Length: 297
Image (tube, rainbow, N blue to C red):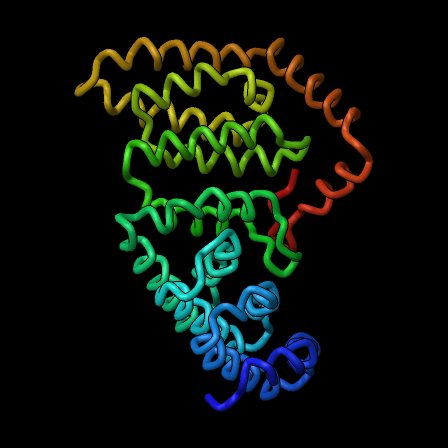
């Protein structure tokens, strides 16, 4: 690599303009390959244009996406760049139609999960989940229901420790507290929660923060996810009979919200909350619909 840092800084804007806007695949691919070699030599330079590099994971060209994935995964696994929430872009690559890209993305997460006793991946999972749920990525990256669940199911292979479950639950419940009136967000959050392994402490958390999600239980998908939580918790009754009190209390609360009167009250509360939101926030929520196989409200 003969390119100097000074020369790179002088022409970086032009390079990335070409990378984003050139209609020629060979040009975009050549620049991405150059970036791979350059950032391995000057990893600190990655920060200024990290959004653009991660953005190449959405390129229409298989070759450009693969080159971008190799660049990013190399930098992270060689500990030259710290992983952050932008890795949600790599999570999308798990379901890429190009086999080599999907395989490399899967291998990346498997390897990252081995670092720091699993903490390297776990520490950024909340940010990954947040990006997947909120639909903060552009329309090209919005997932249909099946793909969303495939990505979540894959990532949960690496969540096993009791403290990890409790920490994730706390963050997910916090998202329920701040969620807007978009049912798609509730369903996504509830599905992620249904993948957790609940113990006594986490069940107590669900009961304690019941008011944060109770009004969302009128939605059938949200309700089904909470039934899954209850059913999975019941499987532990043989080993821990004390859980029965918590499970029964949670079950009573959930079923109460599903009564005709409970559903009516919940719908009215959601409608009132939606009216109170700023117009810009409601407009943003409306844009979260998916493409051809969207998760509709």
